[in-house]
Structures are given as C-alpha cells and as structure tokens.
Length: 298
Image (cartoon, rainbow, N blue to C red; front, top):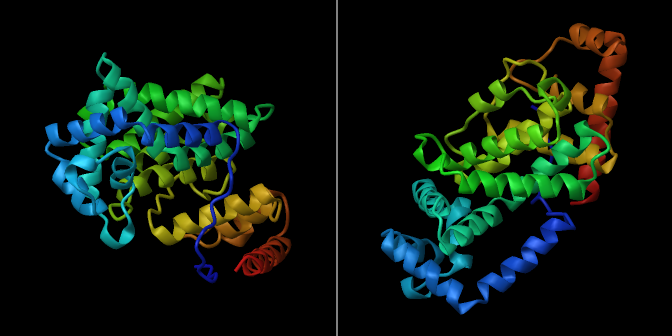
C-alpha cells in the first residue's frame, strides 16, 4: 500500500448551502425550546442516560449539540450501537406528521453534512454543467426526504448507510443521470461495508466510494475493499484531483495499482490507451507529486 505520513485531515470550507446549514444549526442549538424537546425525546426513548454518559453531560441538559456528538462518536470512545440506536429513534420521529418530525429530520441532515459535502463534490465532477451549490441543494433535499420517508428505520442493516444510499439514488435521478452517466455502480456501493467504521464513518465511506466510482478510481467492479487504509487513499486522491494536484489518469494510476485487486500495468495501460512503461512512469510521477503536496501541508 502507498505510504504517506499521517496527518489530521483539515476540513475545508464548503460554502453556500452548507455554511447556511451550519449557521442555522447554531441557532437551533441556542434555542431553549429545541433543547427541551431533544431532552424529552431522549428520555422517552430511554437513550438519555447513555447519551449523557458519552457526551459528559447531565441528562436534563441534553440538546442538539449532544445529540449530534452521539451520532458522530469519537474513535477513542466510540459506541456504534448507541449511535445506530439514536439515529433509528430520530428516523422514527422524522417519519411522523407533527412538528417534531421536521426537527428530527433537520438534526439527521446536520449529522450527515460532512458526508453530504463529499457526495456533492463527487457528483459535480461527472454531471457537468451543475455548480457545487446546485448539486449541494439537491443532496440536502434528498437527505431530508430520505429521512422523512419512513423507509430507513425498518431495515436491519446500518441506518446511516441506508440513508446515504437512498439519498445517492435520488440525487442521480434528480440530476437525470443513469448509472452510465453518473459513473456509479450501485451494486458495488450497496455491497460495500466495514464493521469497524462506525455509524458516522459509514456515511463518509459511502460517499467516498461513490465519488471514487464516479471518476473511475475503482479498477474492477469486483473490488469491495472496506479497509480504512483504502478509504483514506481514495479520499486523498479525490482531494488531490479537486485541488488540481493530480489528473484523473494520475489518480487512477495509483488507485488501480495500490489495491487488493490491482490491475496489471499492461492491462491498465491498454485501458488508458498508452504503454505499460508510460503508465508506470505516470504512477511514479503521481506518487512523487502526491507525497510532495502532502508534505507541504504537514
């Protein structure tokens, strides 16, 4: 596997709709009536004590901020079962018809914002002609509608993964992009899983996989690597493409090689319309460029 020095990923400002969501979220967190509603929900669902424990809070002072923290557990004290239980409880409420349903769905959307940013970036590239803001709005609407649909909480598998898959499908429909145009093999994304990622990690992982599929970073439709190392490599390559550090072919030369199902250089070169020697040289230069860019931000 390609080895790069480990550094904490610095979140970049997404802008537009995502900034507005964050500003609205700050207002919600400061609203005493919202805080009281959330505390009542958690106590009614018998989740208050557990959420209070993992967020170091008093049960009656729990609010949206603590709920969000429970949905995105820290790796040092991650509780995947609790995160799944909290998300399922929110999805049940979001499927209702009263005012609390709207608030529950809004909290779910906020929990998925990091994954929504990634999904938006992944869809801007293949769709073409759609700006980041337009696609971002489509993604958020899809997430909200999926949360309100009443479909997710009945499924046995991870709710965050199901939520993102439903949103991804709707986004592709809304953008009038079929599988070939969108570049996403839904069977591949649907089968992809990693029991160690956690609820929050699932949403991020699904969107990285979808974005990687959209730009051809999966060398084979049989590739179902679920390891964290592979996920980090794909995310790193996507970020480098977005920054203009690597071209799509550069990223493919790395992703297709550093894989549990690597494509032989001769076959990869034939697919790319070049020679095996030229393909190897491209990968060597791309790795050097990526390492240099990575070192410059450490």
